[in-house]
Image (cartoon, rainbow, N blue to C red; front, side, top):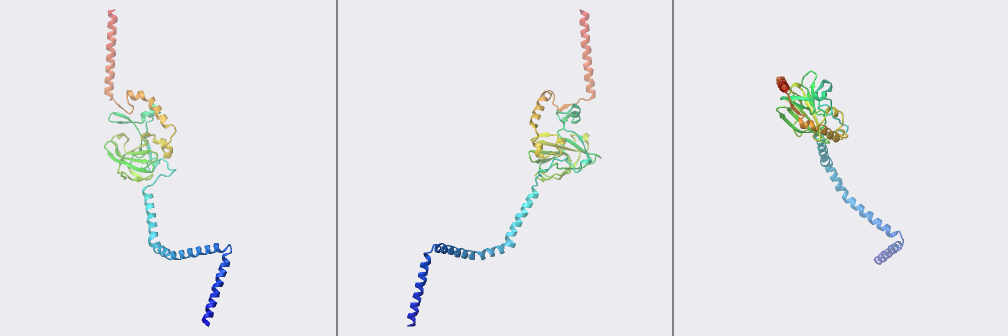
Length: 303
């Protein structure tokens, strides 16, 4: 009897619950609420399952894995920056010495537009020939050797020992600018080195090409392969140096003005005669004039 009453009571409860659900389902809010509740349950279950594994992985890799990789990446970046220095935006071309006050410019750049006296001072005498100076020559005021430094940040593209010029170092910079240093000894860089402004390249020395200069360093600047007056380039940025206004037009005009001179006798090199040879030439000229004068007198006498 009791079992039967329990069954009847349970049946009444089920019918009551079912009737309540049917009543609730008729409301507009029921199904959206049921959908959102189901979503919340599923999301909660997903994060509950994933959270322990993620936490364990982060705890395991944190001090030994992830941080090590980050440190390695950071160290790699630092090494790369140290090995590949770049010129600062405001870096300007400097004289290739550590102390500008202790040196003098003893050889000047040959400027085609300069006065004749200045051009004469910019000629280098070697092997009975005069050559145009494509750069400047720097010497210590006391005549001693001095450190030759990089005029700007760049990459060493050439290091060689020349029998006439001495040791030569060429450095390539941004904006197609190349600086060249010669008459060196005890060179401290090799081809492929990336150097910063002020890095020591070597020591000033002597060479055969300009032996009259004594201990000195020869310095040149080339823009797109063409020589540039170093004294005009000092304290200018490489970008400004490369974008000098009307540089190409000035070069073309200069070439046209000097075309005739280059055809007759190249200004880059021409022979120098000794004094005895000049006297002999003058004597021959006077003798020829005397002979012409004698012939003229004989013609007048015959008439």
